[in-house]
Length: 431
Image (cartoon, rainbow, N blue to C red; front, side, top):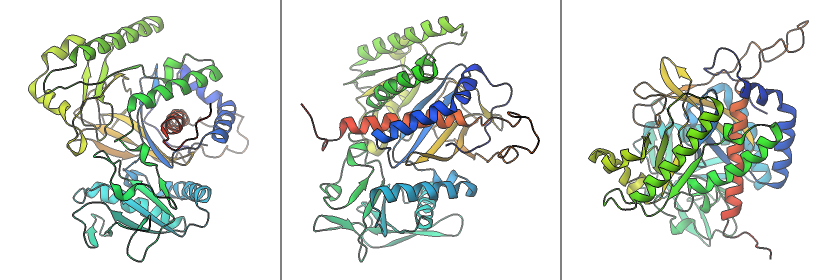
């Protein structure tokens, strides 16, 4: 189920939200049946945009940071879900090794690692951090803003297993999306569980493949609810061999932008929506909000400013950008502290464990918020309506408005499950 959390939404429940809430029993049964057939990613975070007339995921992260933005009240949910996940994978587990990003100077990320370590400690595991950074040759103690610290140790490999000095883990938890490629030290581990698997890394994964899987999921779920899948699914196109630096492949990009904008216009006309359509053009295999721009007309692509071209050329870890996703832009109607906001939902195994709002005071309702200057506002539990009041008429307690975010996030997580199954290099192929 989904925690009863407070959202920034106020006012009447719209038709889509009401349909999702009213369909809870059918929805939960549908998810239970899906998880009997498919394995959820170990942990997931999903960025969601709510335009009022449409509610859709815009990014699905299989190596989530940001755990430090969850409130302390959410920890028991995360710990319980972590215990369930570990029991399925390695019931006899005693030691868990976390392999982090090489962000030694990013205090927010280090605080996220500390929170992740805390969650798995509370789940009953010995947890240590093993770094693949060439800079970490001996244990390094890093101080955190709250006065605590974490220790990074050099990752070691011996007899086909990875670990640390005097620390042999059953499970290795990747919190590094390996954008720069898969290091040899993590390849061909035969007797340990590596989660998420290497083919979930951005060196292999593509957003366009994920959203093809999500399109399939949304069609099936839309049929269950009796709704148009477009209401929960962002349209998209894809281009390869684009080079913003040399201005090559731009014809494909302009054509795809034009095509997706045309599809959005038709949908807006069908539903009587009087907003101006836009698309988000972004790197097909990257993260951290790099290489992202808003486009409202394909003609804009022929007159991009040098700074925009430079920003679109390189992604995380200096990787060149060539594969491009053209994604339907979804407005956000939510605001927190007068700033434009979007919810980010966190899951461990198949359970929603909490979330927060990403907000940006300098950004508009049609722009990417995952940029420098973004801030984070933890969601809180809705205490007053967790239990029905004695003597109150049925239905008198407020509905869980956060529920629909949890549904859409789990649909994206299910799509990631489909995606990982389809790209698993070790999957058995049947004729």
